[in-house]
Image (tube, rainbow over all chains, first blue to last red; front, side, top):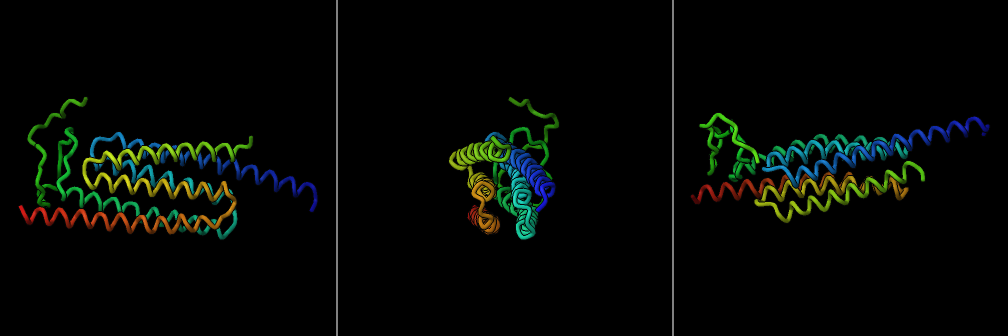
Length: 138
Length: 95
């Protein structure tokens, strides 16, 4: 193998490693943001929004980093399959658990002012939608 | 130190802290759906951990484990949601 070709391959490997590292750090950061959202947000629907969106993005970026590290056709196709599967199932799971939680009568955050589902589902606790002003947030 | 091993260490730290934080929500969670959502988050974090381990160990076989775990986690969440739904229905019928 000529020296220039091996040099170019080494440079290509370094570029792929740097891209994979950046994807890893970004994905890890998004997963961390999702976990902080799980802990800090006030009611279950908001927590679900954090975990579903930021968690999907973070896991997808980390899986993409695997594809960039190995750069083989078998690995890339498996990574694409995994990302497609996560993108398809995460919204379905979040929708199902959100609907079940709504029906089981969770307490909303006290700043919630609109509940458009209350005419369609029977639930035990209803929020007060009479007051138009948003309450103070501590 | 190269860039990739350093970023792998950073991501391991991020994911471990996230795992602990989500575990706190599983323990604290006021209601059952809160705990289910936190468990869903934990499965996302474990999928990410397996993906990072695929890079750091050098064995691409572990990627299959991540795919299978994503499948099982989805089924688990759906089953839990159905359980919550049935329980709410039963309580409403009793009231």
